Length: 318
Image (cartoon, rainbow, N blue to C red):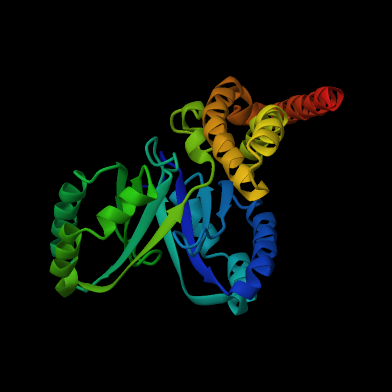
């Protein structure tokens, strides 16, 4: 893995005690403030658990080079942060370094990070086995991408495979397939440790078309603002013209049933409106670095103004 040319990401997966979830989120906020000043730091993303599909916290920290990522991993500041978090954690952390490229920069709806500790002297045999697995899983339904990262001596002792699928169902189908189980059995003599952790994304799948090739996904707060921009009028208009007058008064449906039907409609409509809106706000979602601060302010002001206008109009309607 070269230090130059491509950015790299540190992917950390960790299990947090249920009672410490809020404290861990606050701790991670403090870590964000520390890491932001490190050379080469680009961005950090935090993905909370989504049980039962994703039970771990996933932290992605992106740097301009491998040297920059190594600098953070070995820094006294990071070690101090880790000591402070240890009472909140359960078991071991998985920390991996992966190179970024155009295909890997986009987060799929469902992913799996597979870590393998290979027995000494078995590295060549394991690489041949990994090629066999790659050929088999290339035929799996819904596969969107596959990355394989070899161990980095002194930094990352595990071999890492990252699978990206279009849905949780297709990911699970491959992970639990008889063909894959047979391949895993073949690797037992080669490996000392092997485990899989799944990652589930949030709204990113709605923003893929609006994200420039090779760019990271938009900031979470921007995606949330656009989802709110489309969800609010959808829910309001449904309730005004369908939910209250038709489902409630004409069909006399109970509130939980009417609410469920409304939620189904809202999700279907939002899934179409969000990509359409994101494409028209691409200038704001992924601005050039040199204009990011000003563009972020202008875009946020535009959406806040749109919220205010909708509230005023709907207020008048009622």
